[in-house]
Image (tube, rainbow, N blue to C red; front, side, top):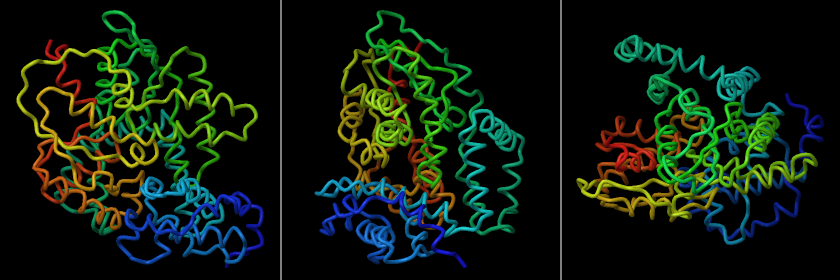
Length: 439
């Protein structure tokens, strides 16, 4: 049994009543909420969760496993924030609530909580830890073990979903990007922009080619690119999963690292990373040592497509292209958190040879949502099936998206639901069409 009195101090971190009162209960969020769409139960909607948080914060109801379940059932896609006429910052509320339930031990066992925290801290946030795990996974994938495991179906002995979850793992890159990217990269011609680059954690080991493509495209744009070797994970996965204190340690480290350098734009090619780094200003606003630093840092963060759209740099493309049928999926933390919607579309449409088709429900979550598709696979699959049906209806041969989680999830969907489409990051398509890429 939980002793509620011991959580009195912990509950103080929940949003103040004036913030919770911002919700006017209009219900516009219901139509865009993926979890409410499944259950049609009020508590599974943003409006319902805010009411639950308000009740707990006022000590009208107690913390419970049901409360924890609803906070974790949420995808944190932030579609409700885009729909909200009152500007309610729902994501910050639910993430704070997750910190409370995680610290209090509701909704999960102590062992599962410890495993999750250890995995995120030691194998995701740790550069060396992630590289170690990535090398093991690459050996597993290349040595024939993965084929054996999938052919025998041995994982079903342990869990009915383990086979499916294993299929989500992306192919590990042959070379990690931080070993290939120089700390200072220069364009062939004149330096027109001074940029910095955050190579991320999963992007560095599992999507290294996208990082290299990003550097090449930035050089084509005339950018000087500073990529500090001592940068760390942005902290988003920890921050979204109840371990905010550790996420803030990583944020402070990144601020210190990048502050040593002179640049005008900090480029990110991962929607989740970019969104969290832009949020450093809010997350550290009460830190007397870092509040101003965090504001300066966050103000410079740009998604790669956002940078290209705003600066409109000259790039030399191959003049004659075979027409390519393309659609675009909005990564939640790009469109809803960063409010970057038209920019990637305009960049994509401007590319030679691209035949663009708008995706129905393009901003509806694909179900990846950080580690949601691992810890809540069945729930994520409902969203993925909907997404793949919409992609199939476009008849596009390429679907573009700007987040590694979305890319992995949609690639899984192509096999799971037999949809013949190639999944690429927008920057990879840009690189493919550059003249310099043909040398």
